[in-house]
Length: 121
Image 1 (spheres, rainbow, N blue to C red):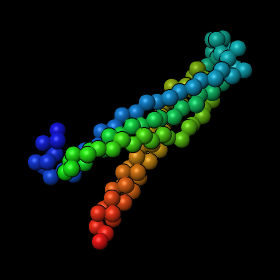
Image 2: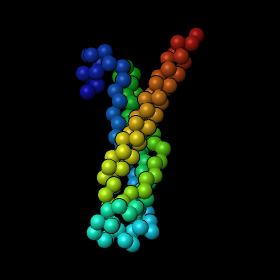
Image 3: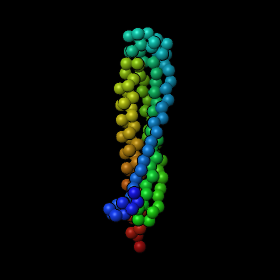
Image 4: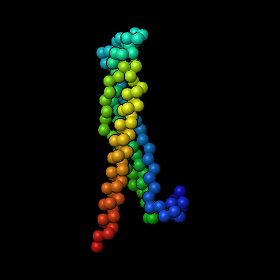
């Protein structure tokens, strides 16, 4: 990959991966959530989620690399059996937007800081 990047005049390679961390707490509604139909609409759990993103940034020219660890803000949602999957999807979408935005900001600010250090007399 490094040789291909050098031949294509690419300066940096970014590889990232993440983990979704979830905590679920049962609420008072959990005692009746097992009842058919009624349980579909009674909020029975509170879910807290966050994403931890790790990025490896490789500088192609001098073959050095840095690792960044970015954490999203936590989101909380109260769900019922009926609403759970839709709310899960919304939570994950918001978290991705948050953590990817933070990653881009961090890469951009570090790149600009390195450029100003390298260009100073």
